[in-house]
Image 1: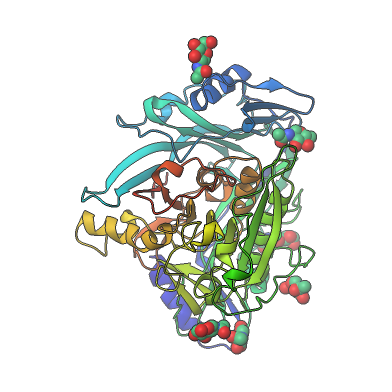
Image 2: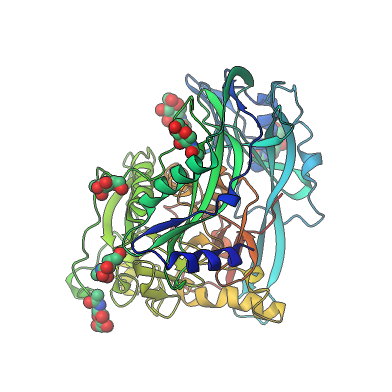
Length: 586
Ligand SMILES: *[C@@H]1O[C@H](CO)[C@@H](O)[C@H](O)[C@H]1NC(C)=O
Ligand SMILES: *[C@@H]1O[C@H](CO)[C@@H](O)[C@H](O)[C@H]1NC(C)=O
Ligand SMILES: *[C@@H]1O[C@H](CO)[C@@H](O)[C@H](O)[C@H]1NC(C)=O
Ligand SMILES: *[C@@H]1O[C@H](CO)[C@@H](O)[C@H](O)[C@H]1NC(C)=O
Ligand SMILES: *[C@@H]1O[C@H](CO)[C@@H](O)[C@H](O)[C@H]1NC(C)=O
Ligand SMILES: *[C@@H]1O[C@H](CO)[C@@H](O)[C@H](O)[C@H]1NC(C)=O
């Protein structure tokens, strides 16, 4: 369906010159009558006894302690849970990489039986709630030197509280946006092992919003999305629904939620699957609160990437044997962690990629645990990953790549060109302390590739490979040479993320607090509010109908819980683990 639509849009578009936005007015849902604005009350809190029992499921004997501005639970020096006393925002961070498999099935409804209208965390108001089963965290293990089959397992299921509003026109509209957030990880034995919660009671206030005419709505949305195009490229809208946007501040307001694809070419060709857009528009005049900007802040206050200076094989090794092979650790001194950020060149979505890179950095920089160094911030070229990797990506501890992607590749120029294929165009010895030899001079510990569909899993090869064994091999094989260098974790997406997400910022915040890197990536993606809906698209390579924003990761088996400091010499791993979210939607 989505694919057919794109084809017809593209042929229509060939009639006009310049950039364009395609929006079939039939996608716009009809709204009968006006829709109300709801006013938010004071934040609500989950009972501390409940939170203590949940955090105890993650780290035995750890409980929450009341502080001046927030309530915290620490496992040693690592933050395990946080309640902000002012906003009510509550997190219990699950350990998503080393959690045990759930062998007997997971019953989300049973595990979340404390979620009831009128209970402490979910006060009775003018909204309704229901529990929905979200994506399931699955995984596969590969014993590299044995001929064992790759084992698959289920680890946990994300349960969400879906909030809705029954309008006078009889339609039940979902609530969307960051403000109504109640997401719980449910693991083995139906134990709740993570919480992400932010809630305020909502009352119908009297104000109503009358929808704009279809023509105005179509023109408004098209005009706004034009800022995502340049030159001879188009944006195609493929889905619109109506939801009530909860800012988490003062109001719930009716909006159109618009999903669109960027980087459409006139001939319908595209090398890669561009990130997708998700934007909210007020349905009519009188919006009580501003919605997020359609185009990200493109001011360059966070700095602009530099041009990397050389395309050379590693600098002369005799010149310096850097003794800082692992991060500095001395009493009272924050350990130094080198960070590299690499951004696609000459792309029409440049502002969005930079926005992610800036947010990633500012969250790291605020760390009270580590001294992150902004060592490399570059427009990227293949040599950063390939023949000069030991000067670039393999010379930092933590790397972020912002680019367009497809199965096992990403672009370094626009959405088409100077493609880096995995593993072909990466350093042949892999990344990590073992990759360069030379006393651990080289060191990449963790690599986040924030690009579409770069890390498919066996499920994504369902229509491409006849046997399960082949599908699993296709998922693992490209990464094996990379991990042979001793890198501790690689994180990406199996399905396309939205530019509007907050995952790069959230993962950086958790990394900065000393939490396990892989686990933080999986948690950040699973709790990101922009992925809490059931829209689907056809995967560019998988050709399957699939949801947006499903994260994936691969790491050596015993490294599941490494934090950014724990990048000791690993050598070539004998066992690899993939963890990812499946295609469950509700
Ligand atoms: C937790 O506390 C109980 C009772 O105080 C004790 O028996 C147990 O050893 C503790 N477990 C851990 C992991 O500290
Ligand atoms: C607790 O709250 C204060 C003030 O809002 C904030 O600065 C601090 O970072 C918070 N603590 C944690 C662990 O997030
Ligand atoms: C509807 O009109 C209002 C006021 O002119 C405008 O702010 C809003 O963006 C419009 N929304 C759509 C979807 O047309
Ligand atoms: C930011 O985007 C706006 C709107 O697309 C554009 O007019 C402006 O020139 C851009 N500024 C920078 C610094 O790129
Ligand atoms: C870097 O060097 C390699 C071979 O030495 C060459 O193939 C490639 O084109 C160069 N890339 C750039 C961007 O100069
Ligand atoms: C940059 O992109 C524009 C179109 O968006 C294209 O015309 C130009 O040739 C590109 N530059 C390079 C160096 O590829």
